[in-house]
Image 1: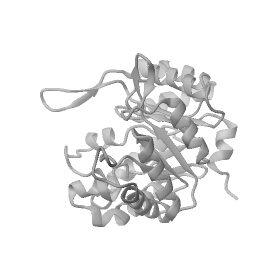
Image 2: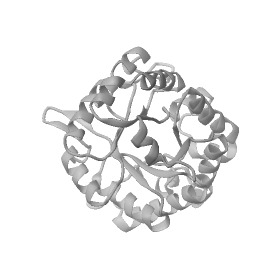
Image 3: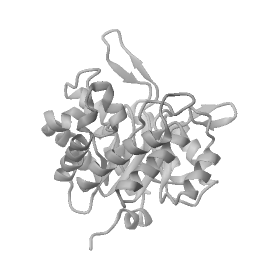
Image 4: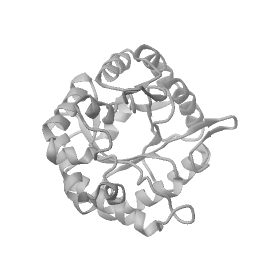
Length: 294
C-alpha cells in the first residue's frame, strides 16, 4: 500500500508547490482568460509547470483548477464544462506525478458572496463545489484543498459540497489580512473562529495562504499554532503585487527575503509549506534545501 499524505506529514515538513498563475503568465497566458481552459487547450504547458515544481522538490502539486467551480467559470461562459476541466486538471497533474509524491485538487473561492451580501444561497455554493470535487476526485487527486477562502461560511459550504461527491481527505486554508487587532478574513472571521469551526467539521489539516508575505505568515502560524494541535499548512505570497506601466505584475518580496522566514514558519508550527502568488520553482527549490536542513 502506498504511503499516505498523512504518513509524510508525521514524518517531516511537507513541501507544496508555488504559484500556478505566475507560471502560466510566464508561458504566455493572456490576461483575463480562463486558466482552467488551458487544461484542455494547452495541457503540455500545464504539465510542464507541474513537472518543474516536482523537479524543484515539491512533495505535492496543486491542480490547475483554482477557479474551477461552475460559478467562477460562468464569468468565462464555461460553467457547463466544470466537470470536464476539473477532470482534465487532475489527470494532467497525475501524469507528471513521480512515485511517492501527491496531487491536491485545488478549489478556490467562487468570487461571489452569499446572501445577504450577495445573491447566492448556501445550497448553490454547495452544489457548485460538489460538481468541482467530483471532477477532481474522478481524476484521481490524492486529497482536496479548499483554499484562499475569505469567508468562513463559504469555506463550510465548500466542505459540505465536496463531501457530497467525494470521500477524499479535505484540507482547508483561509486567507487573512493583518489588522491592528490581529489577523482577520475579508469577512471579519478571526483565526480562533475559523479554527474552532473547521475543527468541529473534522478537517484533518487546516491553515492559511495568499495575501500575506512570508514574514507576516510566520507570525500568523504562531497565532494559529496556539489554538490548534492539527497539522498547519502555510503558503505565503511573495509580498504585495504591483502593476507596471506595461501591465506586468511584480511582487514586493524577493526570493532571498522570502525564504529567510521559512525556518521561522516551520519553527512556529507549520507542517506543510509552499508558495502562493509571485512564487515560482526557484522559490520551491530554495525551500526544499531549507527543509532538508531542519
